[in-house]
Image (cartoon, helix red, strand yellow):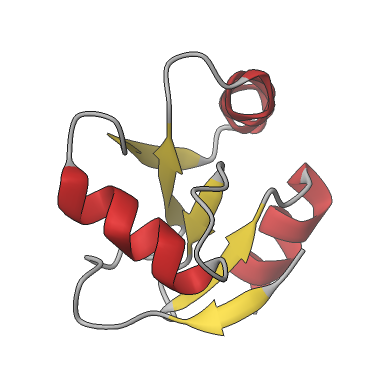
Length: 93
């Protein structure tokens, strides 16, 4: 998992929720969504294949790679492919 600070190019999610950059075919994204659902953690999904500016943001925070899921927290930090425990910890802080 890598953490970076978001730029103005990514909206920030509401407190207690996350913003997830994803694709429809990503198994890791599906798994994280299922885990967030089971924990009652709210999230908004942005499909990087439908929004080129979203893909550019994901590349920016992932060293030029379109790695998903990339999750943005309310404090403006981003994490690449975080575990459910990582998300819980970030939201608790």
